[in-house]
Image (cartoon, rainbow, N blue to C red; front, top):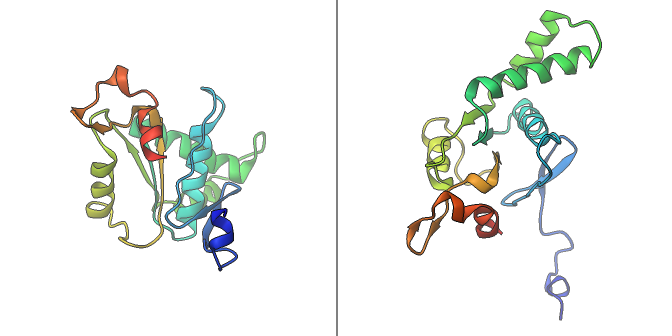
Length: 167
């Protein structure tokens, strides 16, 4: 018998938010994969920005870009939201748009930071809630260190390994 037939509740999962057009459920894991340069990081920044604007704890942890690059890209998005791709930008409106998402956390990570240490950083340093929904996006998932049976896996052996382990 299929598992769906054994569940008596029609929809046991309750969405906690829709960000950048994608609905998220508490405790869920969503993987987004695409070729380089297609816009994954920009989309993740948008998701995190929209979640922060809805007073949801939100973070983007990135293994590819620096803190400054992430902030620059977030600021460009705020300008695009108020001015459009070719519009004149009202600096006050752009500043207000940035302020609305000022609680989002943008973190550049090094290859030695694991998911567990990221989780502890978000909880202890940024006061993310424990046991409540939060949006945490990890950019460049294939670089996330994975602890294997013999300790930390070397970089050349873990490409894609984090994705497999998280599934």
